[in-house]
Length: 135
Length: 143
Image (cartoon, rainbow over all chains, first blue to last red):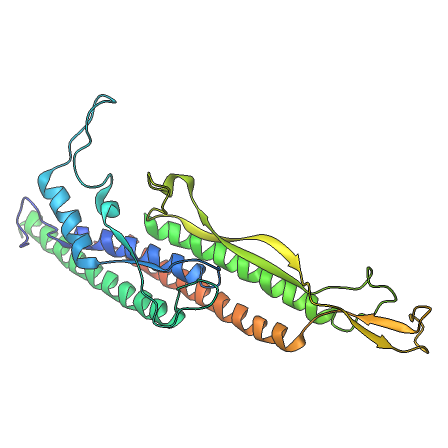
């Protein structure tokens, strides 16, 4: 989505939120690397971002009574994204499906992309500031 | 901000791995602590890890939601392996039949356990460091 004056930050704001959620999931996998029976989880970034975007585009319905039906897919921004279980390449005997190397790689990749989103957001903000100053 | 939750999750991992390292140290330190009775002999102790789901994070069908899964040590169990009975009638702690009892600590297993725990600990420290950097960079956004 191109940046306009109505939506100056473009898609990067949502992307940052989804990256943050994914970092949390990966950190949980790493913390539970030795927990028997723990199943590693991750999210599909493309569909998560699409869900976050669609939700914002459609606008969420506000309920004022207990019997109202809640609108939108999820409750909070990127939290409505579907969380999936990872398929292990080498399952372990205690039922744990966390593979340290995969998770570390994914965490590193995710944090780099988070920083990329931060850079994009920063430059958008600088552009806005320049436009506001009108110098 | 879920980056703050990452710090909680990684800290729970640090705490759990710390308990594991502590028990390994205790097992190794007591590996040669002989005793004159079966009941009084040290037995190898191991932690039981479990994932902690926040009550609010559970979905309607009880499946884990997307947020807040830390790790905790629910229990510390003593090993069921049989003790080693050695025949040393001259030993000051020998019982009336001349036996002393050694702990059922498997030193090789404990060392492997220690390496695994320290690797997991390092990974959690790395997660905390990365999250800290991301948080600091987010704070300086727009400056």
